[in-house]
Length: 138
Image (cartoon, rainbow, N blue to C red; front, side, top):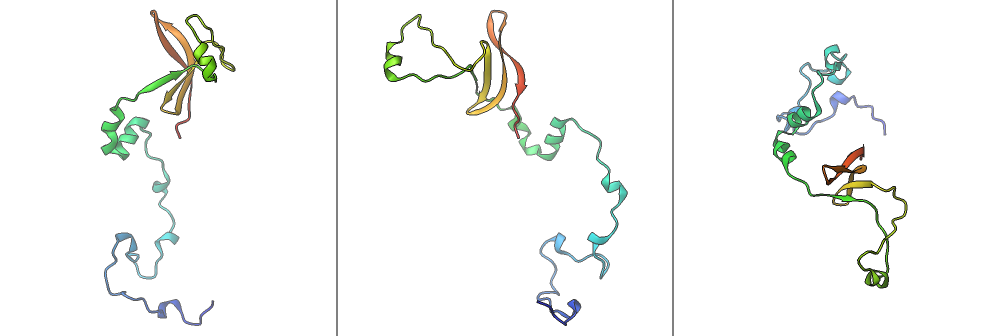
């Protein structure tokens, strides 16, 4: 739809009232659209790099205490399917074959979300997981 009426002649209801939000305020100079002004070269510079943890805390200071909450993680070394009958016949000494998993391979999970993949290792007589790959958390 085209109109012969210049934009300046259009009525603006409530034009004499202050804007509800500062970003709705008109440009400081009448008739100047700030989005059309040349950008300040210093605005294009990246701020000095900060370690990721510091940057996250700066952006979300209220979340800082949450990062220290303990998570219940589980190690999984594979899965298999058995019928109820097969499960009932299991006894001490039975060996269950897990398909598609290399011996020692395991995954670290938070609930159903994979966190990392690794190899099961001996850590002074105790079981440990040596991380070989972290999952993408994005």
